[in-house]
Length: 117
View (cartoon, rainbow, N blue to C red):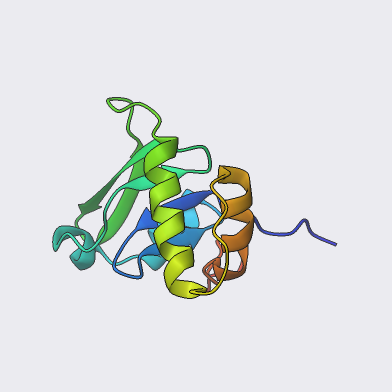
C-alpha cells in the first residue's frame, strides 16, 4: 500500500490555488501558454518556500527561487482565500499545517506515477 499523497506545491491562480504532490506533477499538468500569459501567481512549497515558474518552449519549468525568502504568511493568505471560496461556511484556521490539511482533498489528480503518454 502506498503512502497517501500530500500537498508539496501550491500555486496561486484564479481558482485561487492549485495543489500538487510534486514539482514534476505540476510541470506535467500546467500549460506553458498559461505561464506566459501570467495566469499563475506565486508558487510555494509546504512551508512557504518560494519557487519560480517559467515556460521554456512548450514546457513548464518550476525551480526553487533562491533570490526570495520563505513566505509562510503569503502562503497562508493563498490557502485562506482558497478555503473561503471552497468552503464558505467553514471556520478557517490560521495555523499553516491545519490549512494545508483542509486543502488536501483538493489535490490535483495528476501525479507523475499516473501520467500516461
